[in-house]
Amino acid sequence: MKERKWFSKTDALVLCLLVLLAAAFFLWRAHASPGTAAVVTVDGETVLTIDLSACVQRETYTLANGVELVAEDHTVRVARSDCPDGLCMRAGALSKAGDTAVCVPNRTVVAVTGADRPVQAVTY
Image: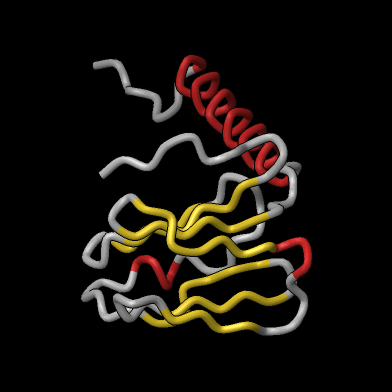
């Protein structure tokens, strides 16, 4: 009976390709342009635009649906939300163009825009 090898040459090649793709993605993401503004939409309507390029001091914004945003040091984050899973709060500080935090129960989207990535559409 022939003994089976745990790793074949094909397995090693696929693993190397996956590692290279992951490294390329992280390098691409690390070099994303800094965000210039955060666009906040509720029910598909823009309710707030925060200029991140001028935001150094801590500023707190409370939306009509109870979601609380904190902007400081050129970033914005969801500080408080009454949604059950809290995924929007776990998104952390958003600073690069294309970063997004979504609170589905409150129908709120916080999207960071930049020169190379403007918000084109918000879909529910």
